[in-house]
Image (cartoon, rainbow, N blue to C red; front, side):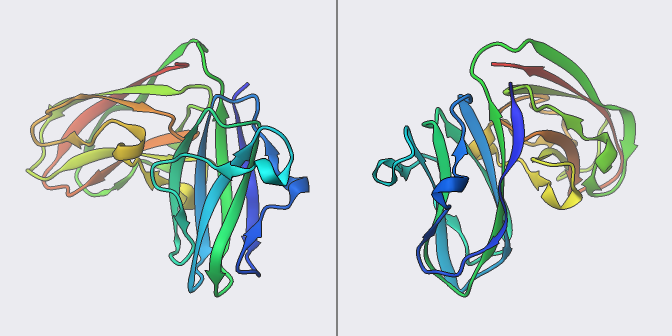
Length: 232
């Protein structure tokens, strides 16, 4: 079954080299893919964080996972999500070369590989938008069970040049947890609210909750947004 979980509650690093205690290492053996969001709550002076995995609970078996932007920067406040494909059974964090006692938390969404069925969602019925900002929190949709999301924008009134719509995602339903979808990591692109070009985009391995956000708005855009979510 897919699952969303806290891999690490807020934790302050007190040593230059610190790994997740062996007794707290997380068993992710049931998942074919894990999307991890590292949230740096208080920045240190320096330091990086990597994720490590191992087939058994043995210190000498842990090695860095392969993700596109590893390591995470512990010297900057922020939140960055990355995808871990086909991890070994056990997953942990490892902080390296840290100074200044950074504090961070880690959220994760694990999913199986293979078909889980599908779901069609009207993320946004026809609406008019004139300003920048995100969709309201309570309208975000829970897509925990699905790996692939096809988004289609139907634009009935175009806004000025530079007006765009993008997707945001989060591991928990919390305003502070939402980040813009990094299309280099998760696929897809932004939607042009001026021309309506590229009205269909495909995203993979998004975090649990998804919503839209407008930026650079000029004039009024009228649109509706549909999502087709699939297990594979």
